[in-house]
Amino acid sequence: MLGFFVQTVVKRWSVLFENMGYIESASICIGSLVFGDDDESRLLRRTMARYLCLAQLLIYRDISIQVRKRFPTYDSIIKAGFMLENEQELLESIQLDYDKYWVPINWVYALIFRARKDGKIVNDAFSCKICDEIKNFRHNLQMLCNYDWVPIPLAYPQLVFLAVYVYFAICLISRQFIITERDAPNKSNIDLVLPCVTMMEFIIFVGWMKVAEGLLNPFGEDDDDFECNFLLDKNLAISLCIVDDASNDAPELEKDHFWPSDKVDKVCSEGTVNGGIVINLNNSS
Image (cartoon, rainbow, N blue to C red; front, side):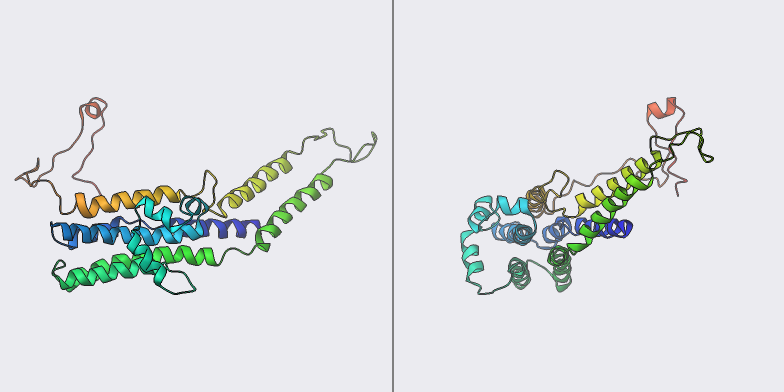
């Protein structure tokens, strides 16, 4: 029972970690496939990237205690730069009893179609590529919502914890040595006062249980939980840098060290040569 519980918790934790929402791929597509160096084109790319970060923030506010405390209201989101006042008005004007995570994603798609119409995206293939990357980003965020919506039943961890504690309570009594008669026929010369095996079981089982307990809610406030605020700041800074400062920015073409020969000699530093270590790049497999 404990093994199945730990397996379920670790698998759930792994899926959540893989779907945290990393914005690099979508930002690279936006920065590379939406052309233009004028202010309007730059603003278009930056707004697309910011809307993706805004969608992620809106979801994190509902699943992470850290993010909810940092951004309790829309005004705090505006002060942090993730959203503008006119965007808040448009978001609040949507009359819906359910979540509005999809609204910034919808804005991004509208900007993509506008950029295609204005010729800033040169063909439909580029538009589809950007849309696919945004869809993957939205899918990752949707996975977080799904796992938060359907948590592990509360009775399951309670039953597992109770079973572990009851097991060791029984061991505390059942594994004691009770032979006290000096002339007993089954008396052993070695009286194991210290229950070594039971102690090892206690350390392993309880430690295993504590690991699962720590991974049960990775969006909490513990030191080992996911740093959601850090990821939000990182995604915003990196995405704006990719789509603006580093957009279509590459070094000047220069001849490499192996020009024009196709032969690549063995590459090693002076320290590796003196130490007898040589890295062979010709026969690497």
